[in-house]
Length: 197
Image (cartoon, rainbow, N blue to C red; front, side):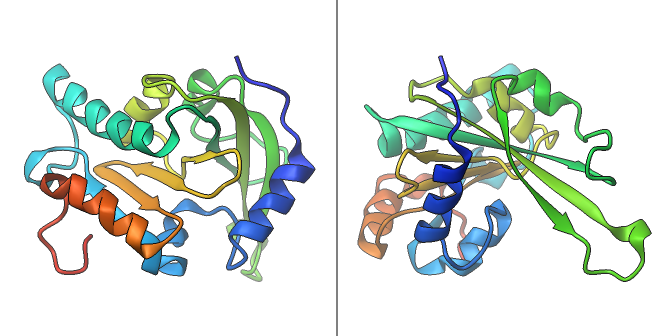
């Protein structure tokens, strides 16, 4: 069961822990690269699961790392929707179906382009709940299928971040040594590319 979202506390905490920018998940690995590691969710860096066995592997890998990060703690689950108008229809519609307890945390306007037709709005939803393996599996399956993106799972203090994406997960740890220790525990899940991508 999730508890009521304290939006102001969460916003202040984010600014304190991640001062380099807003909670845009795909930007975190660049901003905090010294504490970042990426794990692939399927063998041989396969991007998308096609069978239930492959979904089982992907969910196992996601949950294994999540459990190592958050066992015995409460977490924030953050999902994202987009719209072309501040209060317009949101995409993807599946976001609400798999994260109905998510409360609107904040909206970020992408309105730098002088043409209003190219303005969009990123809506971040969050809830606070105890971590348990499997508690976010519905969300993770939609991420694996590239239906949802921009998901962030983090502890109550926002000290560690797990950003699942279609094909794996970017993880931001508290220090580079903690990152290295996590990387060493799951070397078979790492990319063979020198950049770690």
